[in-house]
Image 1 (cartoon, helix red, strand yellow):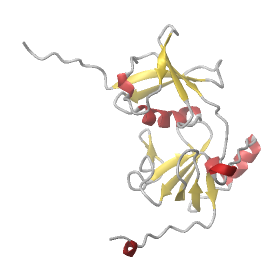
Image 2 (cartoon, helix red, strand yellow):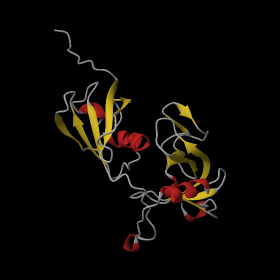
Image 3 (spheres, rainbow, N blue to C red):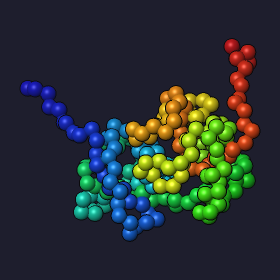
Image 4 (cartoon, rainbow, N blue to C red):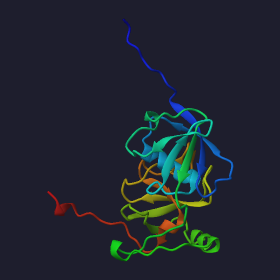
Length: 209
């Protein structure tokens, strides 16, 4: 008897909605089924303005019937019962939040649209910076891009990290915004970027054998 193989599409077309704009028209996007849920959430950051660290995902069928929560970051997107035309609802605060200081004295605040715009304009290409994304280590980088991203809301800052702690090489969804080695690039919201005198950290190889 011949081996039986289950053949499915490599990609899935889904509708994206989010909790802060229930009445807005859904956004249709195409994703690889072979990516992890964490990678999927990272891509949704560009679409929704939410944070991969805090967003919750709910899957609905074509008739708007609830199917399940998509809640295992290590699982593959294709491991869930997802098909073309289904809807993924993103639940998050979608707030422009920033963490300061240590975990003991973290301060959070909201930025008005005007303050957000001013902060974005102050991040100049070529400047040195620190990137402080919630629940991630502080990373030093050089600003390589400041502007909109295709398919994403608002302004984004493209950075080249000093170490390979990024997610890309300066391109997103097939469009290139700047060039850097793989995994050295990233795009973050201006609120998470602090520009200043942040020289590259030097690692003394004599300290290790």
